[in-house]
Length: 108
Image (tube, rainbow, N blue to C red; front, side, top):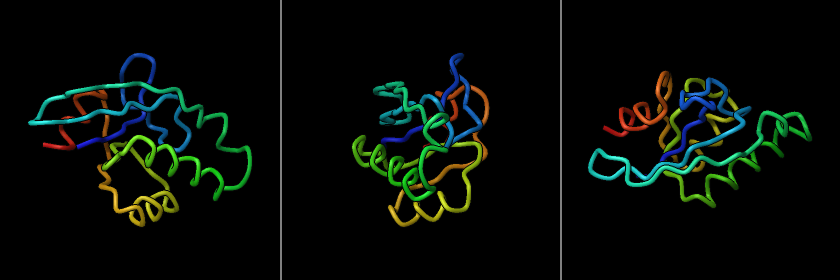
């Protein structure tokens, strides 16, 4: 399963999903991380540039381009929850601590 999780510079779950600076895309296979790629998305800066709909479209594009099947996050706003449900993505909330551990725990 390909999941993404917002990450901080020290490898922790960033509590800001829609305003994350970096997102990790992980391919989880057989309860292990096959690949882990951290991508600078700059959503922290881009969030307020344009409308909420434009930001959601930006996030949706990223998720589609990376073939994401699930989102691991601490918190996600109501509008983003609706968008993720529309995209039929799994959503794993209340993630904290080490981002790799959180990704593995969410998919266990």
